[in-house]
Length: 164
Image (cartoon, rainbow, N blue to C red; front, side, top):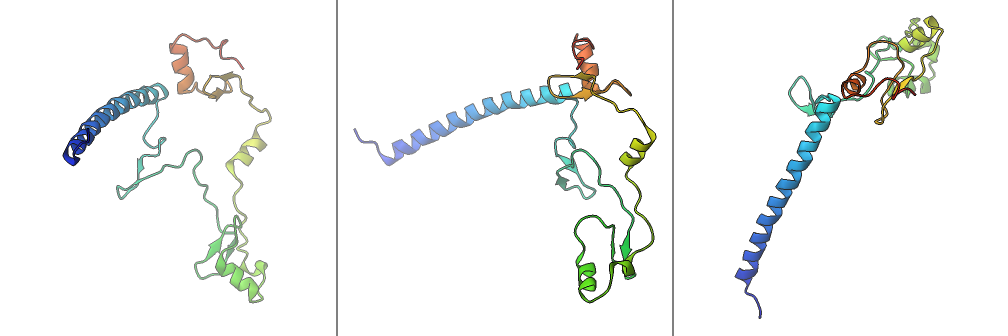
């Protein structure tokens, strides 16, 4: 028996409603699991890449370290400067190609040492990982206990179980 165009369209609509219902059920389950994980790990919107900028436009948040500020090591006196890190800027490349030397642009200010270098110079002992969980989180045993460790201890784990 052949079906008419109208009958097939009706079947398509019925299948689309069923598909949307299944999609909603599945996504509700996924959302519930995500909420549990967010609560368990204490994640923030910024950590998940949903941070907002000053003008209200959402952007991806940078994970990890903040961009360090560096003082200008080279400057042309016209507002152009370069810290000495990364590729040379075009204004400096053009000037060097025109016969000027890099020393002509030196500001005489040495860039500040990174904080990590200062810490390494002041501390003689290195911390090593003492405690770790199955998710890869680690704690050296120095400083305050991190959230993941507090939650694991509250859940009944012991420090000896997580000793690494």
